[in-house]
Image 1 (cartoon, rainbow, N blue to C red):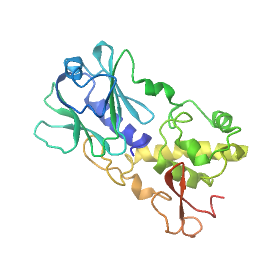
Image 2: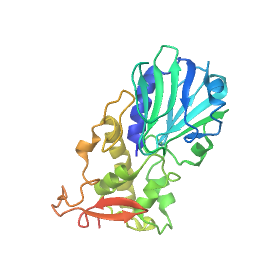
Image 3: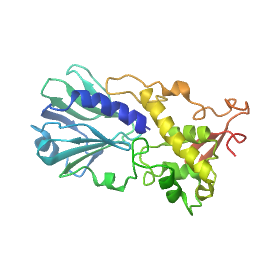
Length: 270
């Protein structure tokens, strides 16, 4: 699933291209992935609107348009938001619009878990339920300690809960916990102050590393130009079950936490 670094990669690329461009026409809308407005109403609502900028909230892309309309896009597990020329063909297209420069904005999604929200006056209400941005948000060890206090659930489940910090998914949670030397099944509220500080540093550093690498491509992710990321070349935990730990050499193990496959080192992550 595209997580914060992948979505930020797409945001940076679209921010260089989309602001100031007008939607000429909407050529395809899949009702299944659409929220907050009917598929029949979307073409008329979008045509003539100008993209003002491209923002990000956690794993969501937010496009404010002229006249107070907003597009909020969640890429789901396999979604790609692409800029293409008119002749380029794609499969599994769920949304497509022609821009005034002749290119197209295309949302393709093989598994149809992505969502496109079209709303008036503000972005999707889902944004309101998010915690601070895990990478750029105004938070630190004190915030983390406060959110962790008294919690008995697994630490990885805490990281995956977007109400605590927005943007972390399965891949980066495994990498963060490996780097912080913390067990994914550790009760969240039992971290010592030094461990909380270590976790806070690791969250921002691993996400920054992912952004610098233009995201992680282990299956379907490509940026808005169709190129894969490179963070997968630096993975130390995710997807490495059975391989030796980079720190101690013991084979990494796979367990399930919060319904997600989880890779960790039982020696280095007690």
